[in-house]
Length: 321
Image (cartoon, rainbow, N blue to C red; front, side, top):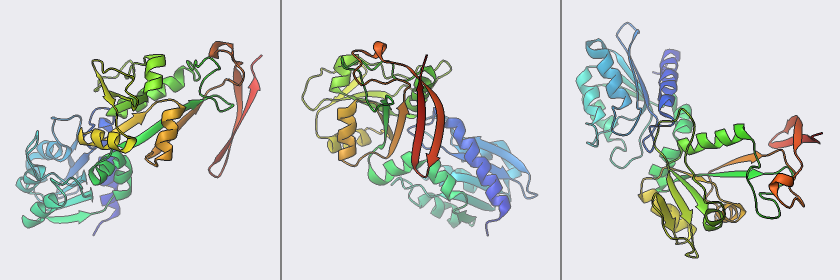
């Protein structure tokens, strides 16, 4: 039966998995810990990037013979198929561990319980469910994609204190400050693809790349939603012209697990109306845009108080003098 010690080691595995937050996608975040027969930690591992070692294989390799008779903790069911790496379930069996503790099963059709079956068939005791809440939250985009075939959709919004996305002349750079814009780059670092509408594409010619100074991960696929055929595809861009649901299905087939939508109000309204947004991330910049001819002429404000009332938030601003 699972114990407090099991949970402690699994939460360590969850923490290890976070190391791959910006580099592992479109693969899931996975961490693993191995303890020996005396309960000492003898191996740890995490999945860093596609094509590199899986967490459990790395942890078992680090443990070596000390894994024999011990316990493996891993956040996601070990794979049972040949991909870029050999099946991890085979490595678990060969390690000689007596017990495996797995947080959640992998709904990928190439796994889907086969990994657990292979391990149990070798006489290894398997416990499933320890740390399942934390792991499911950590990998909600991957699990969603494998279960539905669609990307996990994050809709990013940036508005002024009076709820506008641009000044009268359409200018919107910059509603938010440098720190908020850096946070958007972190959102891009987590995404497999970033999407804008054709209006934003034509007006702003956005880069949509992650430009964090220390970022070394892959750049997201850049996508323009262009249902009116106004955009010619450019190098590094994908133009989608079908209906919204068809576009998401297309991206899902291309292996896009997490989609960040950065378009303007028109694209945001379409995603919301179709009920396909999984997560909203909104930024409120310290400007008032009502009646402002251009964003540079908009009055700047200072945030002086933040209060939360259940799911409601009150922000109090004062004119900057």
